[in-house]
Length: 361
Image (cartoon, rainbow, N blue to C red; front, side):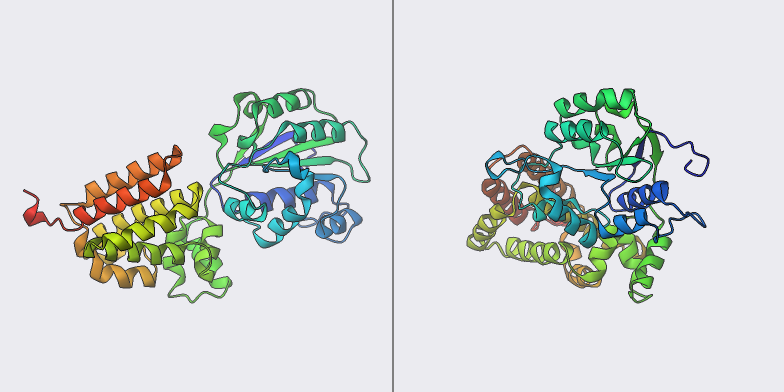
């Protein structure tokens, strides 16, 4: 499209999180304004490319969800510019959790507010600084508030000759219809397990370990990197899962009460991710009883624990445990009292883990 000078004024790159959509958006922006393109890539040496590499190209503008705090004068994307530069360098596959941490966010969800829509309108009315196009890269347009979306409808309907939009979405179905209908959509698919495995091997992961991590990553390069570095939440969640299951089977109520108090401090979003991990491990342990290793996808640490724990997830209790997880997830997502929800869930685990197929009747 760029080479034939048929660039849509508003483009949407959509697909699962962690597959490199923002990296493509940034590369596309550089390619569009590059003065010496060659071999299907930007030159990296012209003034435009150098400004992009330095993170200070005045014709490239990023719009992204933020926490709006008037008391701290944090009201639009530009107010978080320093954190955003860190985000692009530390997490180029766009980990939303990392972004929330960089903003020191609370439990509320970051959004794109009307102040950013006003900023888009103001910048679009100006001439470009030096490049051919002003380019707005909007990360997660599904988080546009309705009043913000309404503010930019006109500029999307009546595009300016020197202004382009590149939207990057993890959930295009949640974009407001008025915005979605004005975007040229390009769907990006997950890389295959083999491609992710090759990616990990290139990062230094051993060929024997890479396929397991690639399968766990489910096509997300972000998740693959987290698994490979033993950072992020996988290891932490694995230890919590082991601890909860041990205490629940041993019926140590006092210890479970303390754990529920500790889990109360995780916050809503992290609690939901932990419950998703509990669901995955419950499924994996149930499948492990089939004694067909290719069906299981677990890290070595998870496999070591499951080799002993799997018999306790069986036909008599697997469905009940999964329902308890689903119920806890629903209650926490609706802002239920996290401490009570976690303790209730752990008490149910105490009951269910003692069930065996022979005793089910």
